[in-house]
Amino acid sequence: CALVAAGATPAAARPAGHGSATAYAALGDSYTSGPGIPAQVDAACARSDHNYPSLVAARRGTTAFTDVSCAGATTAEMWQAQGGRPPQLDALDRHTDLVTVQIGGNDVGFGTIIATCARLAAQDPAGNPCERSYRALGHDRLAVDIARTAPKVGRVLRAVRARAPHARVLVVGYPDLLPDDGSGCFPQVPFARKDFPYLRDTEKRLNLMLRLVAALNRADYVDTYGPTVGHDMCKAPADRWTEPLQPAAPAAPAHPNAEGEAAMAKAVLDRLDRGHGRG
Image (cartoon, rainbow, N blue to C red):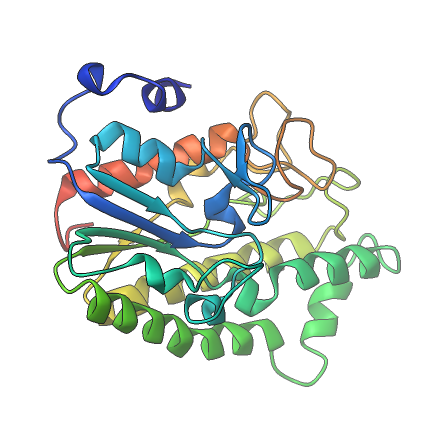
């Protein structure tokens, strides 16, 4: 992919047009860190040197780049150590002038949702057993969990602003994981047929929350869902940018592969080019 190639280009040959050099810090979870994608440079955090922050840093020719993204991170790991690594917010200071943050999926319970829906699919493969389970108490528990995560993300963004008061802050959304048209692909992705639209809508709800919280905290939102539609984990190996539960390309299950990280890098670079508060 072009962006991957750009990430390995010597500084003198890097393309122009992506702004001046910056002190850039990347915070986030496994969708940021890039588990399984070569080359892994931090085993404890499953961090790749071809994740989207690394590609963005190389393309922009940053003067200082710190990537503290870590698989399994929640908003709590912004303030507390994880796997022997310092709190992610410790990467910021008054000299930081670009910050990307991709967080919230683990607060909502992304891994648990996948395991639950896969287990329940065996009971009713043509129905929506996962949706029924999450709505069993008369309300959508996942919608409630997303709403409860919103203030946590807001607190992270206020802490980022306090530690890096001069930085441009970008909140990065999550890419398209399941077919946008609501269709399914059992057994490649082992969810019941009618649960696919429910889970698609749940991810869209999470991204909408991130967009709104970003706006309320003077941060820019990066839409990675729109640019990745048509490359979800139900697609053929040559076309997908997110791997299914049994990956064919180097990546963690249900996570972006190298092409997915490159697509998110392009979305971040495009958002930086558009300037503050536009789009």
